[in-house]
Length: 258
Ligand SMILES: Nc1nc2c(ncn2[C@@H]2O[C@H](COP(=O)(O)OP(=O)(O)OP(=O)(O)O)[C@@H](O)[C@H]2O)c(=O)[nH]1
Ligand SMILES: [Mg+2]
Image 1 (cartoon, rainbow, N blue to C red):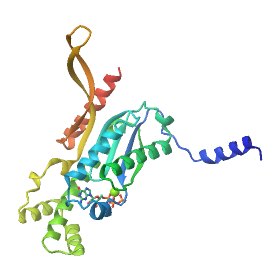
Image 2: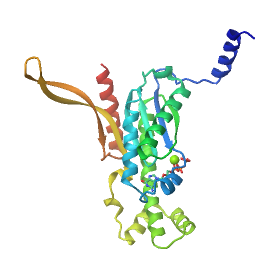
Image 3: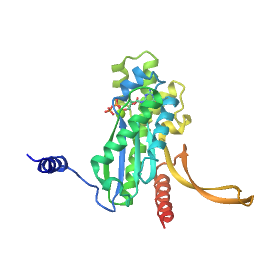
Image 4: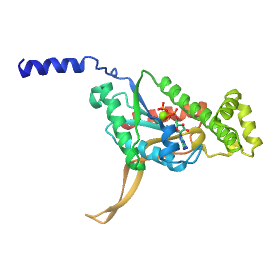
């Protein structure tokens, strides 16, 4: 077979399953650490249930993704996951799903591995989001997941640290309601309300216009200018206030685009 016809045949096979995110739909991607339960326990030997070094590595990875060629309007990280909201007019890789997933998973895995000097893999999925209400629902869902998991993790590790085996602690925590979990922690002297917000709500990152000033070297005059900087929010609001907060970020990004 001639190279040209072989090339055409092979390329057709390669692209047969290609999918694209529809134009003018927002894109949300979620990256998640693969087997991080084992990694955090064995290779990295971290504090349980939360370790600030791990959290800082996730934040640094998220910052790296904000500079990876996509127009990210808002990023959110909790536990071993990162969500990115990508602008509905972003046309990186022609919105091809396999490129979005593989490039972002590659960027995040490489960055995180180098940060901890330990081979680490994050996967990536792409979610097509047709309207703003669904964006708000999505991020409230991930934040509620963060809250539930952190409460359960605190209960689990409190029981483990007080003599329960893996299965005893797991069974006990499974049966408890949210308020009973709070009560259990209280009995062991932990007030869940007083724990750091990043452990309960996750954190948000987005670009903000910041006014800066400097000296113009040509005439020695002071000048002010606007620069985009990544802002890290460690005190995210919750529920309805979080929806309003997110909507404002989306509106601001539309205004900046003009
Ligand atoms: N010790 C410790 N573990 C953490 C921390 N943050 C997240 N983890 C762990 O990371 C894991 C994240 O959960 P999952 O994503 O469901 O578990 P996984 O093992 O990564 O499984 P897959 O994502 O399905 O591959 C949990 O076991 C958490 O306990 C931390 O700050 N300290
Ligand atoms: Mg994981």
